[in-house]
Length: 323
Image (cartoon, rainbow, N blue to C red; front, side, top):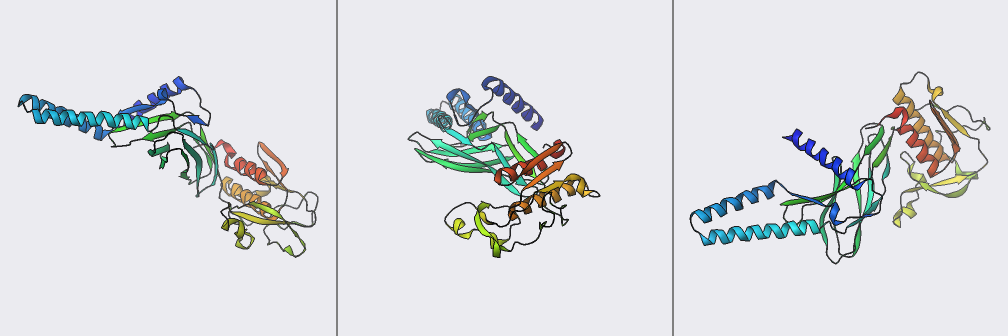
């Protein structure tokens, strides 16, 4: 039975993809995009109503027939409300996310409800991951679709769904959003090796050592990365509701670091990637420009959030690992 259901669901998804094509966010749910079917409880209710109707006809019981028609009417009203719960709902969000192996992350979505009716029990689902929330009338609701990762790689979902079982759970309405969700799972930052000397400042390779800010000036804030010492955290910014950030400083000019795959001979593939990941994070914390050399890939030297994202995604996708 499970195999049959999975096969039928896959066929329906393929048909919906051909019908609607690729979607772009933001998106508003139209009537023709919504599918609705009875749940197990809905089928049980239909069987009960059928049995009560047959019994009422067989025994000429007007009360039994009235009760059967009343339940059938309630079921039809519930089906209408379940369908309307998704109709006109707006959705937008980020289709890419970053995480570290063994950690947790999430895709961020915003649901918009421009109508005067509250939308109840709206579920966003991708694969085995889901999140559910109510969206007040005339308001928006931000949601994070969480996922956990056990190993490095690129996690990809070809689509996600918006679902609803409101109000009675007798019907399930859903729509497919044909927008891929991609999570780049970087290797866990591990390793105690030192990188090779700088390309243009050989005497100053201090990656892995603590900063001494006595002769340096505060230069700004950077996004928090795992492993940053607590003394570098910008607690005031966090207390005011900002995103976790760390302070960084500038001092005398420092050279560019190159992190090379070939420097780590003798280590297994995942151990090399973990060490490279640790070097990248340490360089960001110390404000050092860095480049990355991998077999089949080269990242030119730079620094900052965009460089960090490119480096981590390059490590995550190494070897074409997809899950």
